[in-house]
Image 1 (cartoon, rainbow, N blue to C red):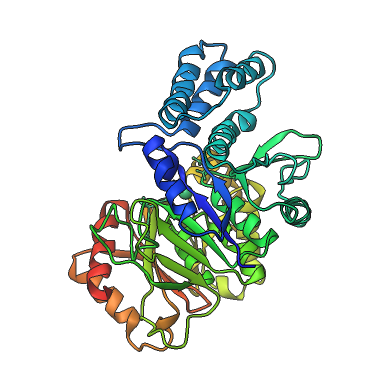
Image 2 (cartoon, rainbow, N blue to C red):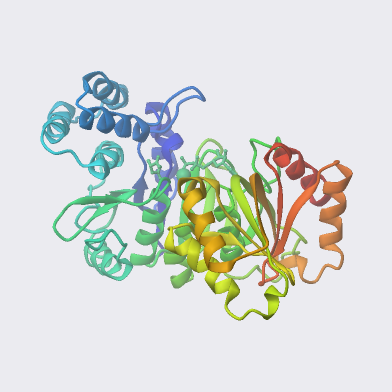
Length: 437
Ligand code: ADP
Ligand code: ASP
Ligand code: MG
């Protein structure tokens, strides 16, 4: 029997009106039997996500402050949904459990997880589906690393026995029951895990846009929807900033060959984006599939004559970064120069120590640090075959009067990465978009 896993994001479950749309979507196709839910998101641009309120509540509790009014705000978000939908739900006793937790020794992850926990319980009651808590199913090791195989065994064993279920996204627990969350946006990962465990026909990820768009809609207005994209392309784009899907959500379904379909809760008739292992034969591949980027990078450029003949230079340079817990993103090299691009946030925390060590270990002639760098990834399997793609990118950016500060062509030939000044970020994306749309 065909089965579809549906995951609804925060904006899709932000209020009672959105809950009704979600129920209509589920009821429109009886294959939609397994539901993964996020915490209530923003109802408008100026609103606050319940997950952010929960973090704020926790911060105030551990600082010994008065968290009562934030907790009331959180409670009000849920009670509005419950009363408007007319669901029978014991919210007071649930909030009492949270209050007792806060007055003992609160856990940050436990608090953050309560948004998904309560929203999923309410959704289960509204749909008439059974609720399955994620804590005993989604397993993390004691050191916080995710245990995918144990999780898959747990989820398969429990969900194989049931007709339908609502499972909260974003969190699981260690063996001793301590709640642990994925990183932000992690309900996408939960949806993928459930899809793998029940061997779903498709994993539908319902959000507030009609699929993965050619670029960020906050930078370019109305970019077209990408109809088909491979798992690899999607991962490149989501890692580089296309925040519509968590970058780790690809792994569980990719293993099982299950496609992901990104859909819009507010426009359910739109087909959205299909994420697949290989594009269908009849599909005409575009040169560029999508463009994404992020700000907040720093480049560290080292110069030393005859560096290329010094065996182990690169390893030593990366070793210094690793020692200080700074991970590198890109590493373009020349004969006498080597640069690494790192996250500014990670670097700034250890700046002085990293530079001291680089000087001591590598004895370069110079070290130049350039911050406020933005990285832009132009991604597409089609670029390998299309001659002149790089030239088109560089001309488009140059014609916009923007100086390119770094170029890195991924070894897979799947992407070309540009570094530009943060102030040029949006315009650079717009100029590349105009060239390839
Ligand atoms: P959800 O709450 O449903 O998980 P998210 O906010 O995590 O939704 O992701 C959807 C948002 O991702 C969109 O509203 C959009 O602003 C943003 N976004 C950024 N880049 C892209 C892109 N390339 N395609 C689609 N959406 C994008
Ligand atoms: N609610 C969590 C967050 O805001 C997880 C999610 O929405 O996927 O990050
Ligand atoms: Mg999301």
